[in-house]
Length: 328
Ligand code: SF4
Image (cartoon, rainbow, N blue to C red; front, side):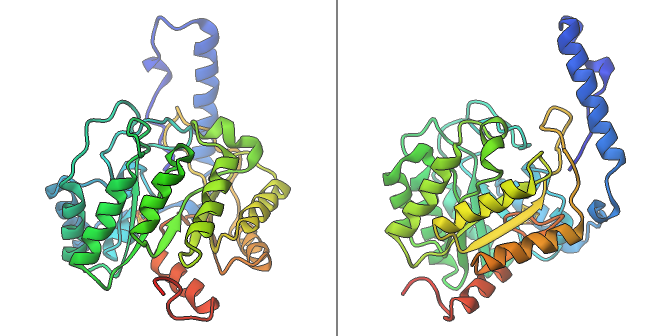
């Protein structure tokens, strides 16, 4: 969510005049876009009974969700519907993408009890579809793939009917790490491309546009039975042609499910919003995606990778002409 948490007065006295000027300009632009925020992006804060019980459960189990860490605007709706996206491998990311609100720094060691606690929470919440993601852990040899696999297995053992979708980092291109995750047979393999090729290196930290495509292609090569999914944020300065090209690139590696949503600047330190897309523009992008052969396209101002994730997979399965795409 856009959050103008800073002020010019807070800027450090020792900073050079040019740095100070740049920050001042950026803060002004942030505030300008926050003031222009259209009605369709205004979220009603409604913290009901389910929201409170999920919050209690997550915090009580020392778990993390991307819903909170990334300041997702859908948190009140999703938690009220007893849906959440678990973020494993701690709450500190080894990368610092310019769009992301998750804390970056040097993470602590591994918590091997975390998979079991996630499975406990999935059971308590009565989930039928869970999304598991993580911070990037470039400090680990396998990027945390073995913990993803352990989490999938723990959920399967505890709640056999629950679909498990994983939203994985790129593991720095490590194919063996990807294989470890695929061997535990997630129901959906999700890896976000985030933005168009031209902006990728500036917006994402260390991740590479072509490495993302390669990961998605490899996943199909290694396990054709597991649907793949990816997500694009809009409003960072891309053109429509670039967006359509990114869709083509994702289809060239046979991605099944696409989500598109409006980028919202988490704080004044993050990448500026270039513009807001209207609901009609999202409808038009959805149509473009469906024309290109994605089995499901979810597009809308507040759509996030895990928003209505269960419905996305159900629709993709129906379009694939089978009630069970995976686990044949
Ligand atoms: S859209 Fe995803 S990240 Fe956002 S609140 Fe819902 S489940 Fe959490």
